[in-house]
Image (cartoon, rainbow, N blue to C red; front, side, top):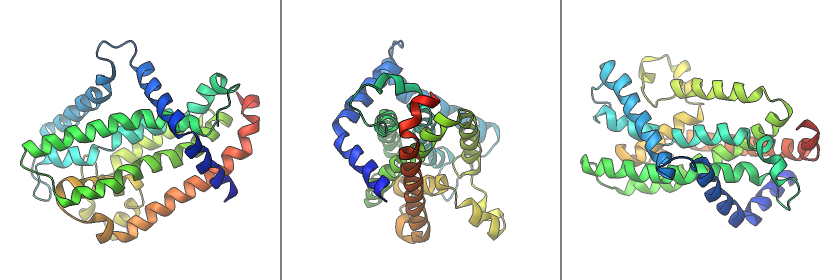
Length: 269
């Protein structure tokens, strides 16, 4: 627990620096683009249209799901994905990419994945805001269930940070892990109820296993907040506790691994 407490203190003490570096990272990522940071939202929007065309139109799955148009159902479920996918991929390689830049600075290395994740988090907030406006024009006006977003949005950030705290350390030691992470994320994307949901057709034991995927909880949580009108946190309290416990486990293991290898990062890099 001491390592985990140290990590938390480092994040708190470096909060303002993390925000400044996150904004700087966004400018770096889009420095050579004419539209600049607009691409942070435009790129996911283009992918959403592509997913709708392939999985909704071309595969003839445009029939309503739970009484909702497929395109809106898909938008609500996929809203968190672009953030968490990019955050985990970029955050996992952040330490070995940025180490030489900050090695001689008075800067906690655990804050490196933090500011990379935060730079992706800003565009996530903008994207969710745009999706909300699309829903309003489609007749799905704001409801009290929007309050749940104050839980699910920070939860998506915490999940990304807890995972990258561990993977950003391990990828310094074993670079091939980055490719494994990318493959696992792709697999988890397609088995999550983001573009489709046929879990009611599966045997109970398989449906229960699929629910252990944290992306399952987030996809349905965003939908419950934006569309379904359900207190998902309460009606699925077992999944809520499970995902909170999962984040704690990742944070605990990540903190232990980070402090174990921190002094040897220069040797591996």
